[in-house]
Length: 348
Image 1: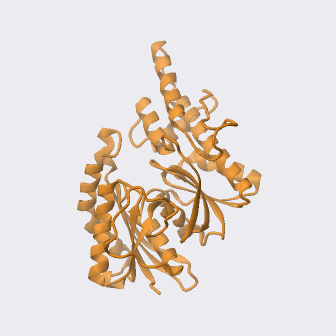
Image 2: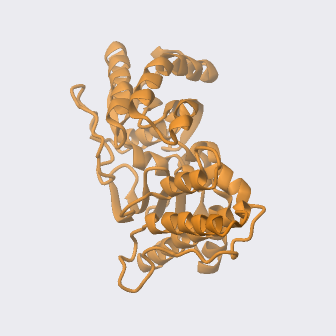
Image 3: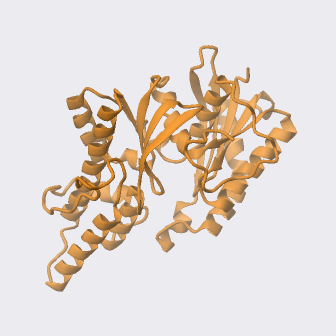
């Protein structure tokens, strides 16, 4: 069985390379996690520009690989298998990672596994908290995705219970930050401002929480618009914008909806473990409120450390290790990236 697995992630604006060791008891040990981000190149546009991201991946791939192997004290010849993000993500960005993975796998004559980026966000938690229980719930919250997922087997069976019908939570953070004159990406500056604000100052709406709304779907477009309209109204009246209070009230609305629906789903499906991952999982209020509500409901909460929540190669290596341990078939070298790969397909 392969023991050293290399993971390559290039779905958006981070070039990630991770190395893990798969032990005989199927536990996974992190050896290296190197990331090169192009976020600064996108900041002036207020969002990720696909062509810029693809070019950045091309420039960063080999140096990031070299840093990862240097950190782990390994050589390319030590690798037993390679996992790479096959989707979902930006088409051009994905193709850079897939091409690199194919080249390394062919040159080293080792198995290649094309895996799902979203499943990687769940698998990465095992690097910090150990194996997942046989059945758990995952709340995936990032710039492009907000989903509730029922995980029966991280290597084979993931069921989507709900997803966002418009803006993902991370997108809403970016857009609200722009309205408030805060830098991109919006998550960290809003979180920072909110610490000095009052989360009950403004009663922003909680989208899709009515009795006729889908139980586990999300909507943050209306919340984003409500914030923009509130700010516009205050400006028309010549009032100074209380940025900290707006940020705190917005953040409270997001965290309230996310945790409310996650707890509801866990109870309905008889699950006693909740994993929160993705870039927004690093948000302090989300973690705090989730901890409070999970404790009240008797649910174990698992949140990876912030470095593991954002896109990285370690999460892809970790998922690859679980796929290898489960004896899943390798991926043929002629596969193509799939920008719309559904979460139900863990490996292709």
